[in-house]
Amino acid sequence: MSAMRRALRVVVLLVAVLGTLGGWLGLVLYAVDAGESARAGDTGDWWYVGLATVGAIVLLLVGIALGRRLAVALGLVADYVPKRAKRR
Image (cartoon, rainbow, N blue to C red; front, side, top):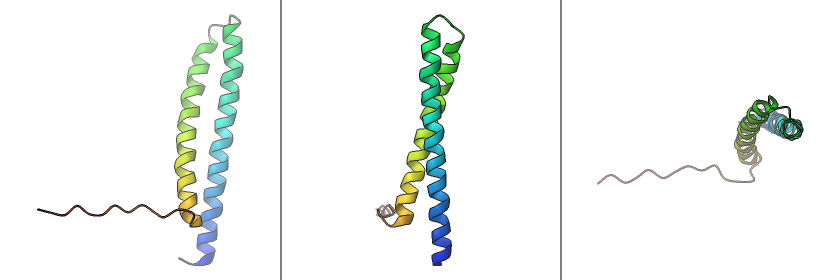
């Protein structure tokens, strides 16, 4: 892979990681805010708290997966390649 292509891959992965973690932070802050208003008596906000929580979980997992790919692209960790099982 050429150096330019590798650098482009690293930049794209970095932007993707930052975007997913920014979205995660936004959803967490929204869930906290909606949770406060739901506890104050606005019972309809519990649905928003639940949806924001599920969305935050998904974005965090995607961010971790993209972060792993970024670490491999930067050469910080080795790419895992399992050994083939020996046939009997």
